[in-house]
Length: 123
Image (cartoon, rainbow, N blue to C red; front, side, top):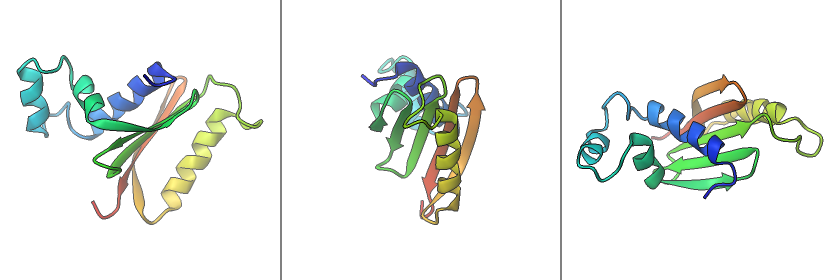
């Protein structure tokens, strides 16, 4: 169980949308949901991803051994070493955009959460 369940749900939902689970691009997702093996697309994605970072203010969720990674930040959490979480999010996003081994494919901030998803360039 992640330390911040609400944050994990936000990241998994964003990854579900990005990966096309909602649009039906991944037939395996749809077929498994249809058989009753899982109750939702998010539950299925949660079952095939790994949590690689787990803090109250930050979670990292990896799909396909890091081919796609979603990072979520909870802006309501206390500053980390006197740095507000919203600023940590902005700094991490800037660093991800300046890297050459991955590409930011989604960046959204809604309410108290910020989520960005990166994809390995060679994928």
